[in-house]
Figure 1 (cartoon, rainbow, N blue to C red):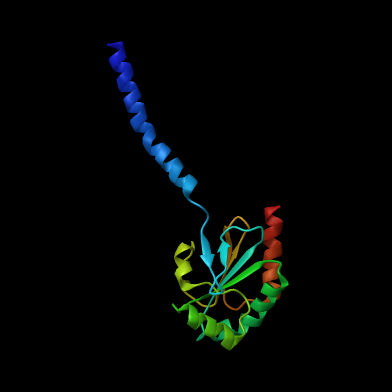
Figure 2 (cartoon, helix red, strand yellow; figure 1 turned 90 degrees about the horizontal axis):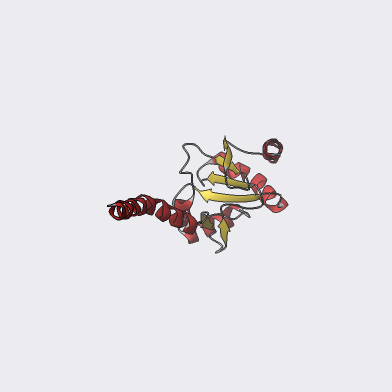
Length: 161
């Protein structure tokens, strides 16, 4: 009788632990989201740098007005800066948009947006600030400036230390 109970106990334990092991395997296989720019380059969600992600549209006047500021931030190299077209455009349409407006920062492919943890914003322009861990630490609505981003970045970097 003792052997039957021991056998039953082992079977029950195995059944109880199976979902735990399955979840551990799935989480182990899962990697941080990544996304692709229309340039063909891939980027990981997490980075050793802070990341700025800006949603814009060609029909949004404040979006076009902030592009020189975003280009300058991207060129400075102190943080990663990405653009995302609010409109679902093909890669070629995004490349044409970049050329038309002198967009120098990487613009993500529309197909990459499914892996991002944020959906389309309700207002434009909308800019997300992400920590190196990939956490969204701030959301800005409206036109951004270099000074405003630098102050926000300094605030969040200070909070992290």
